[in-house]
Structures are given as C-alpha cells and as structure tokens.
Amino acid sequence: MTFKNGNTISVMFGEGNYCENKYQEIKMFTRTIKTSKDAEIAIWNKDDNWYQFDDDNVKGYIDSNEVAKWIDFAANNTF
Image (cartoon, rainbow, N blue to C red; front, side):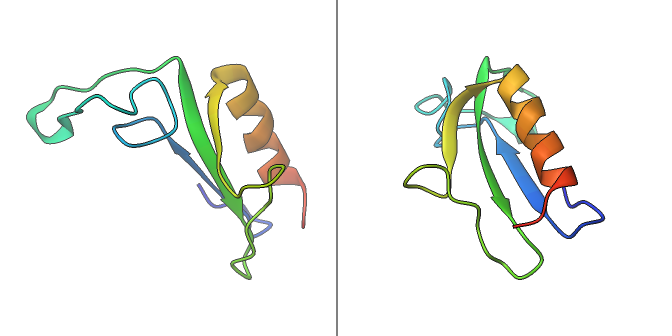
C-alpha cells in the first residue's frame, strides 16, 4: 500500500514470511487461502529508504493490532 506521503507498507503472511505460515504451503491460485494470526511488514519511502525496526528492515510475527498501528505510522509520518 502506497500513501499520499510517498511511504509504502508491505504486509505479508504467506509461506516464507515471518509469520505463523512461514513453513506452510499456501496455494493462492487454487483458491486455498489461509489466514494468519500474525504477519510481517516492511516500510519504505518514496526515495526507497527502508524504515529500520531495531536492527532489521522487516518486522515479523506481529499481530493485527500492531499491523494497524504501523499502517497508521506509514500513512502519517515521513522518515
């Protein structure tokens, strides 16, 4: 999702992502879509500078409430 301020947030919860589905196969093209209790996110700005979460540019295993907070952060801040 890209916001008017130029920031983009990626929210992923499929196979290989840092979430409860990391080691599970998800077959989206055969209509087997799984849900997840958590997700991984990454945020970058219009200049392709990635936001740093502690010591990484990806934050994983976060619940939906925290995802919502980071979406708000990406939409309303510059870095």
